[in-house]
Structures are given as C-alpha cells and as structure tokens.
Image 1 (cartoon, rainbow over the protein chains, first blue to last red):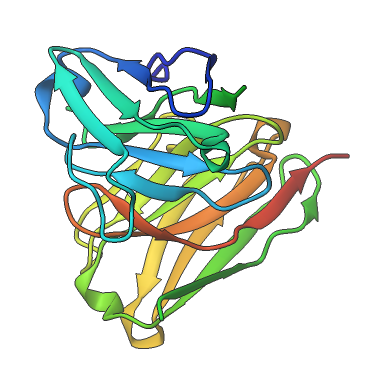
Image 2 (image 1 turned 180 degrees about the vertical axis):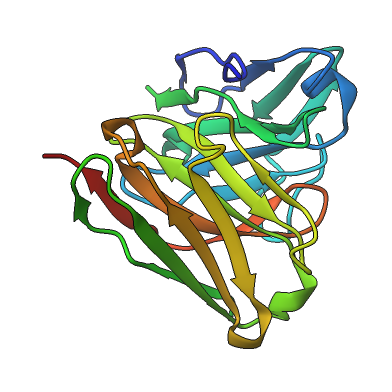
Length: 110
Length: 118
C-alpha cells in the first residue's frame, strides 16, 4: 500500500503559520477519525503532536492544530518558532486493519 | 516514567533471521496494543506490525506479511518481532511503540538497528 501523500517540504518565517497536508483515500484518511501527526527532529525519536484528527496530547503547544476534510488531513502550526524545524509525518488507520504513514514533510523555519 | 527499550538489532546476511525484543516499563503493559515501526536510513516512517493487548489480533504491513511474526509476553512486559527471510529492504531502525488507544503511538523506544547485507 502506498504512503499517504504529503508535500516533501514546506517553509515559513518565524511568527508565520504553515499548513501541511496529508492526502489519502476513503479507505484510510477519509474513512476514519484515526489520523495522528508526529514530529521528528533530526536524529531523534518521533513525538506525537496530534491524535484523533484534531486532539493535542498534554504538553503539546496549542500552536499545533489538526483538521480533516474529505480524504485530506491537515496540520497547522501557527506562530512558527525555530524549534519547530523538523520532519512531520501523518498516520492513518486503514480499512485493511493496518496503519499507513505519510511520506513525511520537512519543515524549514527561515 | 514510560520506557521502551528495544534490542536484538544486528548485521545479518540476506535470507537469515533475526528476533527483536522490546522491554516495557512504567505502564500497565497488558492494557495496551503494541506496534513495530521502522525507518530506513534517511527515509520516512513505515508501520510494520501490531498486536492487541491479549495477542488476539495481529496485523502486518504487506511488505513483511508471511516473513515477520509479532508476539508478546505480558508476564515479561515484552514485545517481540521475529523476522525471517530478511532482505536489504529490511535494513532500518526498528522502533517499538505503545498505542494509547485509537491507533495512536504515544511513546516510542529509541530503536534498534537492523542491517541486512552480505
């Protein structure tokens, strides 16, 4: 099964907002509320930042938000900070009972 | 404090087998589904396999189905991944991840490196 589709890279200046999309099908992203997002700094372990499409775990900044429309989920980061520079991955449950990650998006803070 | 510690990664010849382990602490292991996720060098995350809390449900990515077997021992707070017929495409850092319900990975181990090469 092919990975969910994410842009390879996005960039923004400090203080700006950016949105990363994650496109799948009705058999994964569009069919379930089980979409999560992970942040991975270079050389580090992935960290959960959004679950259930739009919920933030305790300790995650409210600058991170998630949403979904049809077969596309989105992660928005507002008030960009230098520390947000990282790789971001979406993940969705699928109708096959498996999980599927996106290809990842590299966020550069200019 | 939740901890997941993987082990068993190594350099192995193509076609050979390897067994990964993950020891969990800091939470009720037998209350949670567990997963293996891998990351090839310089590449993205790839979900590999999952097992329910009581081992009643096991799922695999198509890329490993028939070659990998996931298991757990709740008495030992341990998760395993038996990997057979390894190929170069299996070269990756293998993470053990705890599921916090609804297919969300809330804690990850630091990973164990598997290198398949002759």
